[in-house]
Amino acid sequence: MCALQLLALERLARLISVAGAHDRRFVDDCGPEADRLCWDTITLFGVHPQSGVIHGDWSGVLMPCTCPVLQVRADFMRKHLWTVPRHKPGQYRGIPVWEFGR
Image 1: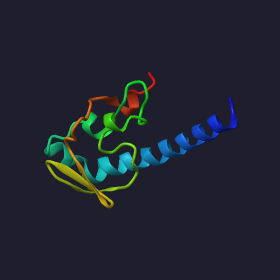
Image 2 (image 1 turned 90 degrees about the vertical axis):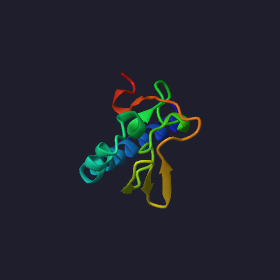
Image 3 (image 1 turned 30 degrees about the vertical axis):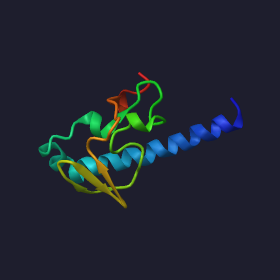
Image 4 (image 1 turned 135 degrees about the vertical axis):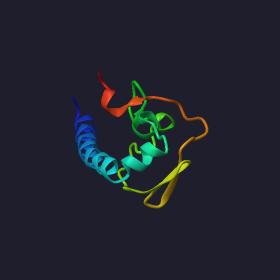
C-alpha cells in the first residue's frame, strides 16, 4: 500500500470517528422530531452501495458533513450555514452507512 493510500485511510478513519459522534448527537437531539416528520434512515444516513460517500448524489442528508443539525423541518434540515433539502433533484437511494462494506 502506498503512502497516499495510507493517508486516505487515516483521513477516512478520522471522519468515521467524528461522524459517529455526530450521528449519536443527531439521534439524541433531533431524532424524535425527525421521526415525527417521517425522515427515513436512507434519507439521513444513506451512501452508495459500492463507493460509500464518494458519490454525493447517493449520500444522505447527514453524510458526510459532520456539522451539527440546527433545525429539522418536514422538507429540509438546517446544518451550520446550509439548508439541506429532503428531496434533492437527481438523488438516488443508497444503503445505510452501517451496511456499507458488508
